[in-house]
Structures are given as C-alpha cells and as structure tokens.
View 1 (cartoon, one colour):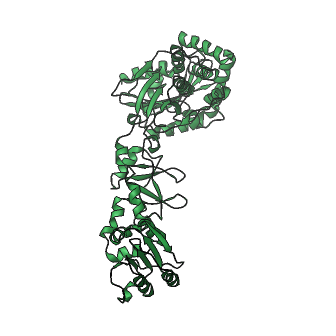
View 2: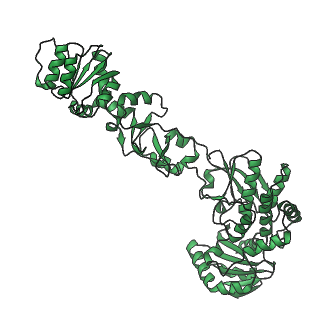
View 3: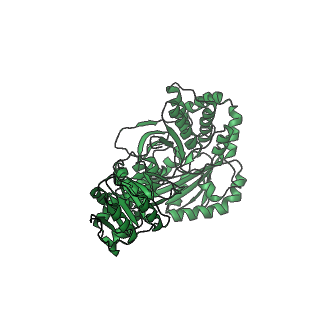
Length: 543
C-alpha cells in the first residue's frame, strides 16, 4: 500500500468530491499507476444514489494523512520457538539483519525477544544463577548443543545444573558433590560407572569414547542420561552452557507496536526505549514485522492527490506530513503549500468532475459507462443541473458527452440526482448541516457555511425551530464568528438562510429578506462559491 497514491476530496464530502476522486483514481489506474480513492466523511444521500445507480462501490474512509506502520517498509520478523537453545539462537542471529529474534509459543503468540545482549548475559551470571538455568536444559537440548548423540534419556531426568569436568584416574573414589550434576569426561569405563553410582544425572562422553552395555543398564536404573560426542572435553565445556532454552534468557513483556499506529507516534514512544528492534503486531495478534529506529526516520510518506479543494482546513488531517502529488480543483487557490513542484490543474468551471473528464480526453482514454455516470452525476449536483451561476458551457458540453457514454436520459437522471438530496424531514439537524459544510478564514474571522437542496419550503419550515437550536449550539462550541446554512431550491429559485454568530448582523447586508434574527431568504443567491463567499469577504474587509 505504501506505493499507492490516495485520491481524496474534502471533508464533509459532496458528490463532486467523491465522484471526482473515484473517476480520477480510475484514470490513474488505466494509465498504469496504483491509485486508490478515499473519502474523509460519510456519503450523503445524493452521492449514494449516484453510486448505486451505476453500481460502483464508494471509497474507503481515511481520517489521517500520516503514514502507518503497515504503509512503510519494515524487516521480516524472525520467529523462534521457546525451546530453541542459546546455541541455535546465536547461529540464527548471524543471519538476521536486525539482530533480534521474536520468541513465540505454539500458537505463535509473542512471549519475548532475544538479542545478542540476552545471549551474552550468561557470561556475567554467578554460578548459582547459571546452574539454575542449566537445570532447565533437556537431554536433547544439551546433545544438540555439543553435536552429541543421546545414548540414554531417562524418563525421570533431572539435574541441579552444576557442571564438572572429570580427569581423575580409574579407581579414584568420587565424592557426593557429583550427585545430581552434569559430568564431562573423556575416558574410562570404570570412571563412568563410579560417577553413575555416586548420583551423577548426566554423563557426557567426549572424544568418541564408548559406553559399555553394563553402564547403560546402570544408567537407566539410576535415571542418569548419557550423551556421546566426537568433540573434545574443552570444546564441550565451552559450549554446554548454551544448551539453555531461550525462554529463560529472553526479554519478557517486550515493547510492541501495532501496524495501524502512525509512524511519528511510534517514533516518539520508542525514543524512550533502548532496544534494537521491536515486533509489529496486526489486529489479530500476529507478528507481521520488525521495526527499528532506522525505519522510523527513513520511510516514504503517503502520497496524495487532492480533488475539489486546495485549502488545508478542508483537507485530510495532517496533510502537511504527506506528499502531495497533484491538485485538481475548480475553487479558489487555497493555502496548501509544497516545497516542490506538483501538477496543479485549476479551471473556472462548475465542477471538478468536468476537469477530470477533460483529463480522460487529453490522455486518449474513454471512461467506462460507470465512471462517465459518476462524473455526470457530480456535474449535475454541483451546477444544480446548469442553473448555478458557476455553470459554464464547458460543463454543459462535458455533461452531454458523459450522458451519451453513461447511456442515460440526461433530464431524467438529473431529476433523480437532485431529488435524492432533498430529504430534510427524515434527516437529523447534524446530518443536514454536515452534508456539505466548509470552513473559511477571512481575515481575522472564522466562518463556516453549509449547503443543501430543498424542493418544498414547507419542509424547511417543519425542521426550522430544531435546526436553529442545533446550528447555534455548534457555532458556540466551535467558536465560529459566523455560521450559515444555505437551503437552495433545486429549481434555482433562491436560497433560505439560517445563521448564528457574533457578526451575524452582516447578513442583513447580504440577503434580500431577513425573516428574524437567525433566518432569511434571497431569490438570487444559490452559489456559495461565486455569490455568498465573495460578498461576505467584501463586507468583512470594511469592518
């Protein structure tokens, strides 16, 4: 996913924002690029109608532009079982780039981490501690560590972990200190017998020496293990303590990372720790990678193409921490900045999808019926079926071309699109306000303007008391100087306004009729972009 480019519209997405993102991502894919359309909020009823009409799945939701661990390149995890010996772990570490092994149980759940410092720890242990760990090593683990062959492996094997090297001549009486211990020796049938009889629990025979049948029988009777190896006594003595299973030297309760965490959050958290590598776990608890500080400071950020906006306060959160590849828009040039050149396509027209359709033509690609239909639906929505002041001849001609490709009757389809967005009485005030809400910073003032369509004025009158209360509560909570909701007639016969805020008195200079202190009507204004916002800007400059 890290190599994909995400195509996104603005917050509180409308049909143009969603359809432009989908259509432009499709164009990029047809041109051989990995592009994925995403959305920043819920789909409104009108957009759902367009998507359902052409059987196209909507974009998936993304709320933050920052890269997650699953987006970046990290190391493959090296998983080892809990019973792996330290000797095996040393060999494995030599082949692992990040010098960390993740110890897992039989269900592959993380139990601990083994690093070079863990494996070196036994060299600094006191004898009692080292002996207690050696007592946990099995006969098989000891044999594997010293390249030995198990001759006798008793059912009731148990030692105290103490290790002795015996070089005494035959006939010497062995003391009780060898009881329950591990003994290394290189010769002597008699010596072997005496050690078994005095209670040694593991006899390691070095230098290819043999074990008599009588001593084997005696060892079984005394629960004494016998291991035979070709190595000499000194090599066995150096290697044997590495038979300890890694579960007894690993770091338990290690610091872990979740693959959905944001990279910079992880970097800040891990800055207070000192480990070389950290396990990355997915939502199912499976280890999917290993990460180090190198990965957190050397990664490729997410890439974005912005459509239908170029203002930071309308874009995805933390857009400054991503790479912006392109901007395709039909609004004013916003405040998003880059330190590098990008492809920026801005045209004076009624809809971003009109520009996207042109880009299909410029690249010699004819959109499929589905994507032609999406772009057509967006143009109808954004231009209110060519009645908005923002409509250009370019929008109309583009819509005609797309209607032919989409195989629809333009008039019937337009009626369906506009009718889908006008349900007011069945919607909550929150849903209505956030259908298409945009915020602006005009000088020192913070403004928010929402817009939706209506067909019958009676519907607005029904919801008006409750909606006024909700609008005022949001305005106070968000600290807007002015918050406006435009209800625009689908036949372009003006707009009803509801407003709140410390500077709401300017509304009497903006609209024809002020009904009360929070509402009014204008028979001309139906475009937020080309009519309402410019008028507000002019008035605020004089304040």
